[in-house]
Image (cartoon, rainbow, N blue to C red; front, side, top):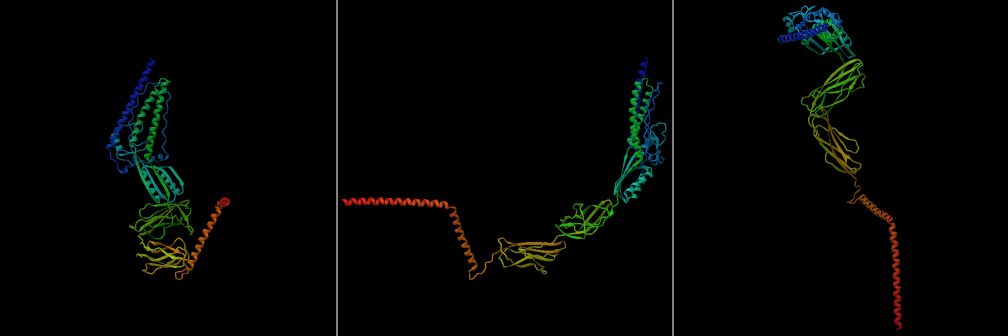
Length: 581
């Protein structure tokens, strides 16, 4: 009977707990609905209320009725909430936001965090009133972050100054970085209500502000939602503690304690998130990137220049780097809209302390927008910090006149005979210092002539000492000066030089006759020599043939003699017979 009563008591307690959780969830949903309605009807508050945070606390569920007395069971004490940062505690004496109409933005410790709701919240949970809804619509929880890039005279000193300034206004240093002498960074958190003044102070200590950006993030919805969930979970925690106190057996106490531990872990997680939102909203993050103000570096791009369209132009600058600056990079802007050319090569010059950049080539394809402003920027880095310098000059682009030139037709001459060359060329306007030069192709000294004004012919004579089977190449070069520089035009012809004929008398030339005789004798000797060679090669054949002829001839003679002898014998026999008759 007693066991049945205990079981029914435990069952009733669990049913009550389920109903309590359902009520708490309903209250949270009602609160969220009311919050959404108030957000849609709200308008943004005045500029002076930025950084003010007033969020109503969610209504707490009523605590369950105390259960009948039971043997006490050990209860798990709730973990203490993490302490706020020292800077945050120090700054609690001043409000994080100005007081707005309809409530005061007080920061009082409550549940291990801050109370962003105007009014008293000590020891009790009030209802969600219309006044609190108005506060939600007027005052939002805004997390602000500022990123700045500053140019300063001393990176290490500026990091220290920014850190001290953050502490003076009630903030603290998050991180610093001084890895290089010419650059560094520092991140700090400062009270939100002093952020604008802090940023203004940073601008004042900088030589130049490269960039500045500020972002704001509204976390009001997340904050209110977490508050509502925390209230519901805390109500459930109280119910579980009541069940733990009324547990009759160790098994019941352990089951309740297990659920209570999980619930308390969720509560601590939500409390940590709420605390994080409160602190990040109350203290804005400022990230500052620092770079050293560059030293001045003298740069000389050269004198103004004139280039022709399509000309292959060369650019090189000289500069004097400060001490302990040994790495350099440069950028050329040719002023005609083409992409910039970047490089890093440099070399020392003959002048002490002066260097020059690597040579860069560029071609202007049009003179329509001439003249152009050419600019070079040089940056140097090293142990001495950063150095920068730049210089410009004027580049005038023109279309250069063309010189038409003709060296003449190809020629044929004998060695030792004087040859005359007559070439021609044009003289366009705008040209000066015209010269022409003849190169005869036989390694002789070129002939350079400066013609008189108006002369358009290039005349020269030359004697070739030696003949050869292939021609000499004669080159006529005309040069002139223009505003875009020197102009050069070339034309060529070929000269065939033959051998001299020598002495000639009445159409008879002893030299030619001698040469002809020598050539004929040479032919005879060549034929005889060839026959001797052939006979020598074929000598075995000749010997065999000769022996055969000799042997054949002897046999033929022997046969003939035998026949003759037989004929004589026969004739003698016939003659003897006749005599006898």
